[in-house]
Image (cartoon, rainbow, N blue to C red; front, side, top):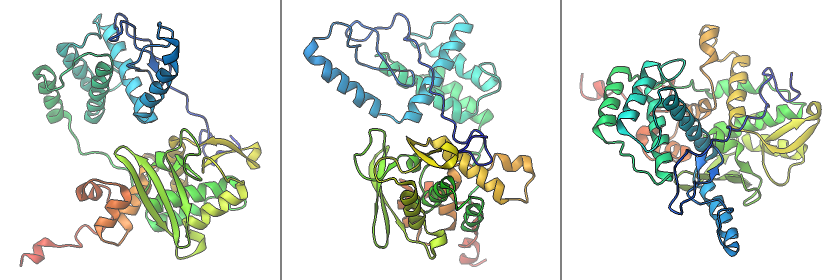
Length: 379
């Protein structure tokens, strides 16, 4: 077992980066050169610096590539790269050209995805829609036109939705009593246990996404890969986050007791781990005695929530096999949305949702009939 992995040997394993994708043959940028490859297999709209760009412009080209990489999240780049490789591999097997985009080929491709002919099993409708988004992005970056609304694609997709569409599968919410039980599964005398307590409480109280939890730094502009930072105040903690639509601020108040207070838990972790700069949540090494410089990945948050929920016996009423897939990082956001007895507007703001309807979609195991419109109507 890894020294930094409670109950899950893969908990602190490093994620394997997506393998680099080869540039599509015969596709040139507006400069006549093949697009350079960005991390995650995405084509950069800028030519490589070795293609004859004047030397005095090379620093600007490097900076432009940095901005290009910053334009999308790492998870998005990884998913889009994997979807592009999936599509081009299918095209090769069918002796079809992936480029330039052909709507009939793409219609056949999504049909194969839905029928289980493009992989080991049929893709869910949401996966097919994501694959189409990835293809649209990839074609656009290559300077090629692909119209998702073309009847060859849109009509097939509409049929797939009607035939295979299902309600989304939602992760189980962990409620306050569940969180308290999960905290008891961590070793309070070990650095790893202190870190995991702080992560769980901050993620739950902040209603944070798993990428937001691990993207936090101690202060602003301390790391290149950070996506937010904290400021500890008298009454709580202010968390500044960079999201898809810009910056937002989340307030995490102090708890009713030190044992369940996210601010106290974080302060304890930072003090004993001797972290005063850079990433908040890092790997613990050397048999649990040393804290490394590298931040955790978002997948490790999901593994933590799942392992702790299972160890604490959350939803023990369900068969063991069913419990395995019930918990993930999203369980924290759903838990806050389901249990916070405040005006819905405050929950919506905390989660960073654009609409109240989106927030309601996160509510689980709540009193669904607290507002009874049948009685209110006089029946």
